[in-house]
Image 1: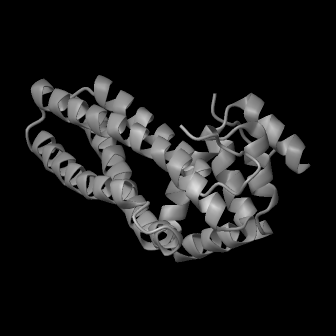
Image 2: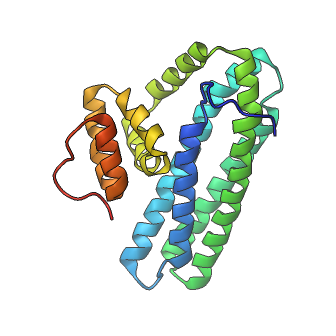
Length: 227
């Protein structure tokens, strides 16, 4: 792997932390789902639906914004990952088919099939994201300044529907380090930060919630954060 440069603007770091967290949590829920409990099965499959939709949206965002920027400066550099994106689209469709079959016929064997198929999808995505974070970042850092990368990042963010932003934030908040979390929220405009704080309070444990409040110099909100 080429060396990384943490000081440079990293388009992949935060969203990939959120996706890894979301993937692992969903995989673990599937591993222990009780197919004889309709509520547990519905909630687990609902989370799987959200994950697959977000993965598809993430592929679209990278194809629409990051790959054109890479190809403009270094033709062919995104070919490998672009081909893997096509494979991931097919894998998502196959997972959705297996998910529907399990919902229609809730049996342990079906749950195991979905779990194993998702485990393969997660494993492939972990390798895939690492290539993006190393090879793609190395190319982006050679081709563009941090100001240009930040402008690209803002264009991506502005293109996202609020539902996608809120879903990403739910999984991103607990996946970040305390310093990353505080830095990101400190840069938000007040209305957006208020929404983010509501999510953070629900998603963080007491210790991390207290750290965030101290870093942002805000009084802890009423109620308890997650244990």
